[in-house]
Length: 192
Length: 192
DNA sequence: AAGATATTAAAACTATCGTTCTAAAAAAGA
DNA sequence: TCTTTTTTAGAACGATAGTTTTAATATCTT
Image (cartoon, rainbow over all chains, first blue to last red; front, side):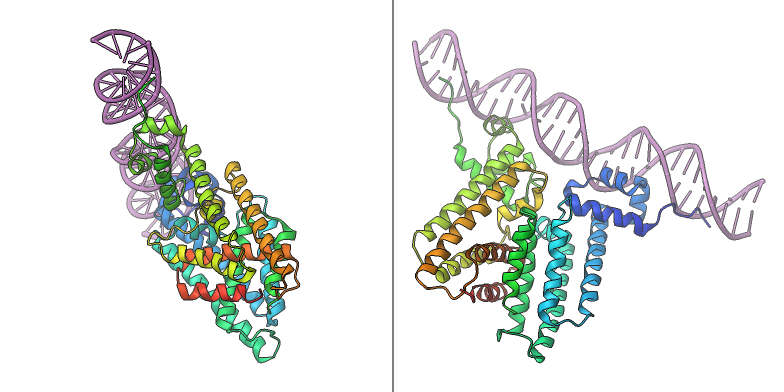
């Protein structure tokens, strides 16, 4: 057998993820990645093929973390209102607590790479479909228990909440102001 | 006096604007700009100093057009609900009717350039403040005439509507689906 | 028509891009 | 210990980035 890798693949992918998240695809150069990940250029290409493939892997990793965070919250079986309050609070904290103001990696990727990048398109669409599923499940459960004010279509309400989440992220990138974002959150949740 | 320019500065700026809008700042190269604008490299630098300055001018031009469109609508003195319906419809048409799926240039610029680019930050903040002003004016007028359902703070309602607008733009970039976007719009406007 | 001026096209500049290659070093199994 | 394999560091690749320069051209005023 041969010499083993000196680096842990997940560790360096995590570092690449943070860099792409902060700088975006085109502003993050291979040199930046080599420096940040702490591995050799050849090792980078050996392990991750090329820059774009590394980017997709990093974005997938980000999404996985996002998904598992949401699933943890979902498994607490909260009624709709506290559930969405917690979801939005997570978003707001992410936006206001980060000195780098990275925002949401998936949102950044959507605006930077679409409509040209097919793989990013797939990832983003999958993510939205997943959010829709979770949100509708929560809303339907609350509907059954008569915890819901609204008589609106659950589907549309779920879409609305997703849209509102992205709106918050957008405003939060431009003006990461806690009071502003909380006001928007409360107004959005007043419909539940 | 000397030889006059062979190109109209506003015409070529418009072309640069469309290119930056479609490709973003980093993906649009000087060569792309030269080809699209139909002028020489030297002329480009002579007239617009450098790439970043050209980008800012293009973004400002885009904002101007956005602003004047909104002001036209504002001057019709509509009640809040039809006013915002028209605003949102404009956004949705822009998203679903464009084969290039450019989205909103200001939104693209926000996610691509912030928080590093001070001039873009200023432009974006100015734009949000402007929207806030217009939206609040409309809401206050409707409040006076008792055309408004809600007793919520006008300020927060305005922020909410701005956020919702950006949410639509984000979703529309990912999934430019008319039915989906109209559903979100209706849900967002249901409180007015 | 002559001179002044700012245009134009295109080459040239340095820097960096993403990627590949070369060669030495290191670690495992035989 | 020797072979095999895969690491490593770093040079090298061609292409393109943004910008500047060179030199010729075209238009205006006098």
